[in-house]
Length: 57
Length: 73
Length: 225
Image 1 (cartoon, rainbow over the protein chains, first blue to last red):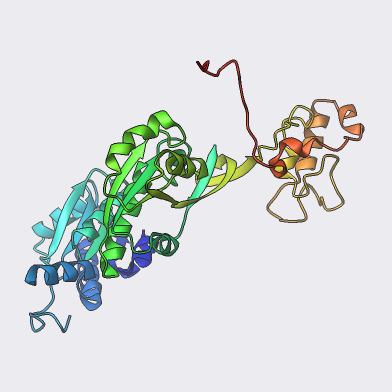
Image 2 (cartoon, rainbow over the protein chains, first blue to last red; image 1 turned 90 degrees about the horizontal axis):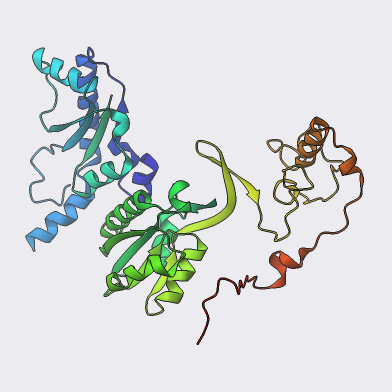
């Protein structure tokens, strides 16, 4: 899957897989925080950007 | 980002989290009950098993403009 | 079964050139079973193409269609009405399917999205190993069911050769020596005598080197008026 994203040019870092059990609420929150932080650094999905500029025109 | 009209606004990435009903979804539930803070921009999708999620669904999510994905189980 | 492998996205993009409207056509038979060109792979590739082309600033219109079998007229004929307006068809079928599409619908070019690689056996999940080279003159009856044409690196008819080391082929340390396997079976069935005669050269005229191979079965043909 990450290879697919790389091939398309979206970047493999946009996806994360984690293993959390039902008791691991803290780890779950951390995982969400981590992904969000990483994706924030990567910037928005470039597909969305093109769509946005289409709308503006 | 800098060329966007709202570049001063902090970017809130839209994340979709595919969560196993029995593990991660329950963990998310528990996180809520414990009043844990995590980014509000995450959209949780409950799936019967995280093994159920296949590349096609993940690609569709990106096609529709999601910024990142979390698969948790 | 016929086994194939998806071409890299970059190669597919290059093949498609400046196409605006693309139909990705899958096949529901062999390439579905080997996860190369069935309905799901069509969906994945179509999605990839839509995103990649958009990121490359020439968004393509990509649609999907999978038929049960791309190598028979009856199954591809229903595609005819869907082809209107498409610049190109990208087929995820084997080489037969790609050519069938081009022959049946000469007005639109059908390009290959996979490399057809072999006639293989899925020996375990995710692993396909060649078992037949369609040589046209089957030897399996004299080689205890193990094909030296597909499985011996030298295609020997009398073996093993000196490169067989402890049952392993000298060409590749992961490949068992086909002739060792044949001898093991002969010993198991107590028929070693059958391997002692020297095999004469095989009839290769029915294999790939003699031009287009064709079977005509008059008993099956419809009578022409």
